[in-house]
Length: 456
Image (tube, rainbow, N blue to C red):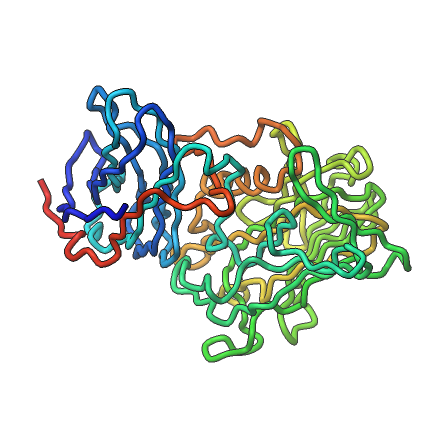
């Protein structure tokens, strides 16, 4: 059944200090006394804004109150131009065969360019039994590299069923979402993390997937790697200036050897002092390098990996330092000093100019065994002023929210509840069963003037 759109004027109202804007309203038919799934999908565009924007989908209950079904924070410092899909379950109604929904934008402060936020969308509805609940996915648009064996379609197998590659989920198609005015149009579309020896795919009881890599050769050999450079040389991106973001947040989820390992995560092209790495090959002498800056870590490897092959998530950036997360939600924040005095687990200034990573990569070596659940590089960059500030576009709470989402998605900690999203926008996620068809579709992509603005 096809529904026709009634044009809705975007209304702006103020609730206390919060600015609330009704973007659209929808009426979705649903069989009485049955639950159902609504899927709203289409291209979302948003410019930079002066504050975060909350995009919410609400339904009206029998008492006439609007209750939130789904929401997403649109970061102020991000431009969005992506396909956005919201899936949410509508409760069973005993008194009506349809639900009124509304899509709402809100912010804690007044944003003058709300009308520039658009969502050209279609709305589909599926009857109960045609869908199932699953884990919420990660948004590639927030990353410069994302390797997750769990993601369907990202694994490459040989004829024996062994894993020979994990495809990077981030491609040049994700260039638009950006912090500041950094372009990623030169991102390679064929980046693959390749184990040197075909790896074993492991599926845990909770559905998490990982690849187990065993080093059958010399200890110094590479266990697995991406290409050293994940960007193409292109106009506006000449070598050696390939860098995308000045303070990327590196996340490594896996089981590591207590006897040592070496992770390389960046390289500046043509620069002998250009690598970035965590040298944990000697468990008694840990070091982290960014160009010619060396951090000497005071902790020993067993301080944060007390048991061989214990699952951990290692996170590092200038903003967060180095953290090692455990299954109970706690983390160890390592202590260190550098040849510049204080520790810098990120890219600093060079003769007054910002320095990024050159090119992110992921190369694991100098270890006998490692099991990879996921590796991600979260986009982040420094603010422009003051000139030598090390404050970043993403706040620490924003970064921690994305870290938790990454950890939860990989499933590395089994059924631990420590990384559950308990925020306002905590959501259950759903997938439609193969072969299921919607019982109605509402196509709004051609509706005129759906974003006219009238302020109260």
